[in-house]
Image 1 (cartoon, helix red, strand yellow):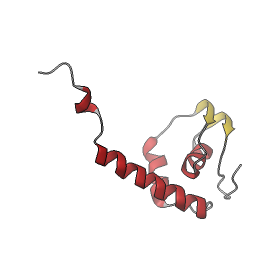
Image 2: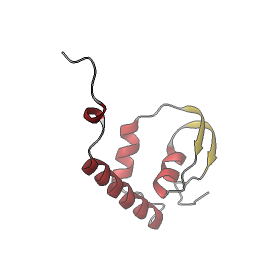
Image 3: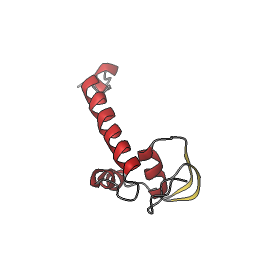
Image 4: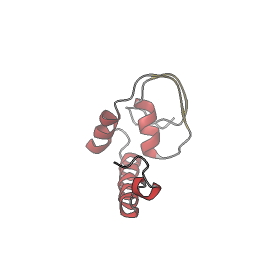
Length: 90
């Protein structure tokens, strides 16, 4: 039984990283163009994250997906950019 994993065994493959970058790019583009109609895939991601409520949420991204997610992640206090359900980018 191996007790130590090599870092290359744990690192995601280059093809996986590229595919995720393309996926996020497509979601960013869709949300930016249709802010009040997010793609189903964005809803699936949010649900899959199953995040708890946070005390503080600080969104340092400027991406449409990041701002959309930040508005929907439960938190008592929020700072940064957000895209509301109405499609407003705050």
